Length: 317
Ligand SMILES: [Zn+2]
Image 1 (spheres, rainbow, N blue to C red):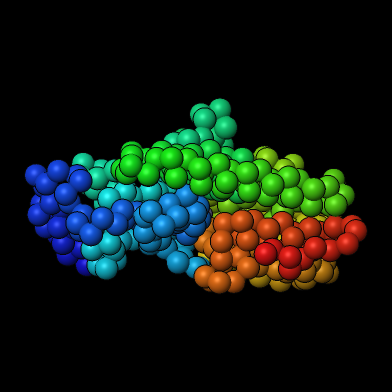
Image 2 (cartoon, rainbow, N blue to C red):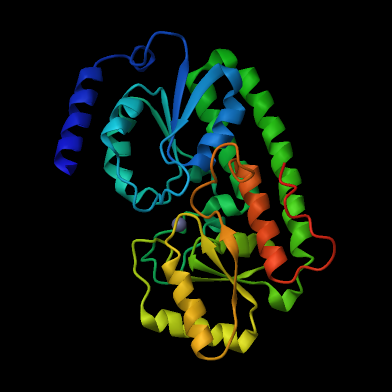
């Protein structure tokens, strides 16, 4: 299957070889942008407005660490003018495809916008940075700048529109960042511990002052072991943590195993709700946009960890 796909892609690319980049896509005047994740696609579409058509390859519930190019992706990628991906090794299994496309069109890793001194290097990641930058809204603001720059490069005639919409998006992200900070303040400092299925939330923790513990490593490609479960339960017992969280793109069984192991030791730990980690919610639902996803997550976390004051859950619109 993999060989067939690579073959198809190579055929597609060899057909386009020699074409100037401007001529490679359909000549209907529509700028075509392909994003890997929904979080990139959503922000890119906001910046693109009516001047470009943005398609995201990975829908709700899809795990980008494990995602491989499907046959139907080949067409989408081939006809694109611009390909935007997260990088920092998030799309580990698309690396070859992206590399091949890079010689033929504008291919941009939006994660390149994150300065080296703000990249997190988790222990045991063998020198690979943590790719989950979208959980620090300030960093995603930088990534949005990278998306806009790619659109301007591909379509300079609309540069002014792209820059104007980028400014609007960045203002909204500034507001979102302030909202997250205000919500975090409602959780007592000693309760600011986030336990999830995999290590997606380290940037969230670094930006907003949470201790973050994942059952699996930074990539879902690694399996959780029984020792990991025991260590997590020790932490839950010692710190009296009221809730753990499941993730939309990671199987529930991992975090449920933690809940069961805690119950076996007489400790009741709640499932605090579902967080959107590596994929957004369904289109049209409150978590179906990047802003809505971040709001859903912080509202869910604050409600489950004993946030004080009037709950604002459900006002993600
Ligand atoms: Zn992840």
